[in-house]
Length: 200
Image (cartoon, rainbow, N blue to C red; front, side, top):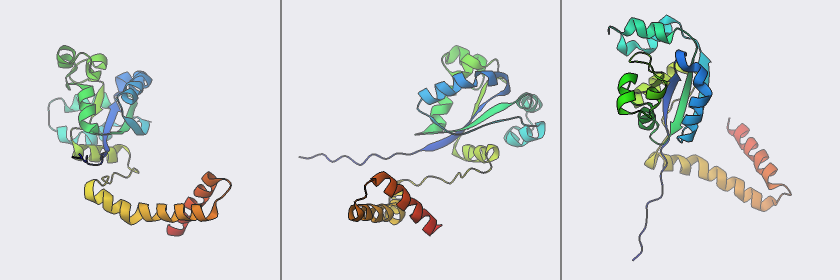
């Protein structure tokens, strides 16, 4: 009896990570941890938000007692915003961060990033999106030019591949076999560029 395994499926998810103003000097160290944890840093930018921008970013926290302190803290200096991608990026990043209160993190999750770099409940060193909707909104806020369309999965991904990718690949590889160029790599590059310009 032959066991057939389903083909592997890769789901790439994105989340927003922020290195907050008081630990920006630890950026390289934190990025190294991020990369070693299996994330890809898709986009990165260093910026200094105004209190107004911080208020807009944390609009869901508006009205809470800590809101003025939060906006003052987040606008107190430059921060680093990053779009992180990997399988289950949101939950893995939240797990790596640990509890939002750094004092609790130090007790319950001593190896978490907030336990290592955070100071207290407010100055917890890093930010991570809570869920998919928050990640989409926050990425769009920090990176207005980035495309945050959902990556097709399952049947939608197969349909996309069958409609756009496979025919183009088939056409290019067939042409490659017919031509038998001296430098196949350069030929593929030239052909791909021609196809892109033709369809754009």
